[in-house]
Length: 50
Image 1 (cartoon, rainbow, N blue to C red):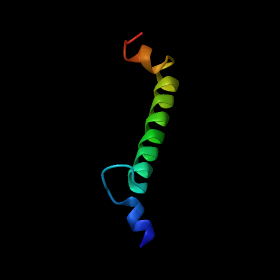
Image 2 (image 1 turned 30 degrees about the vertical axis):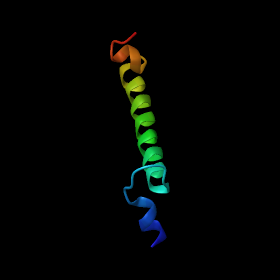
Image 3 (image 1 turned 90 degrees about the vertical axis):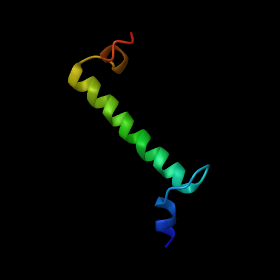
Image 4 (image 1 turned 60 degrees about the vertical axis):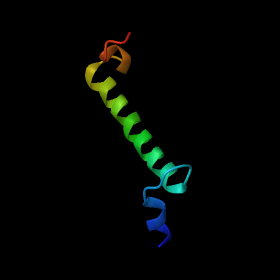
């Protein structure tokens, strides 16, 4: 039951919210690395910001 409580969606600073924040941050970091490897340039250059 404890694992189910950690994965449920709830607002505010809760264990479930922190777990989702970490998971999405890891996905974003891997996506940024993949973009740099495939495009051969940084993410900001890829998007035309720099």
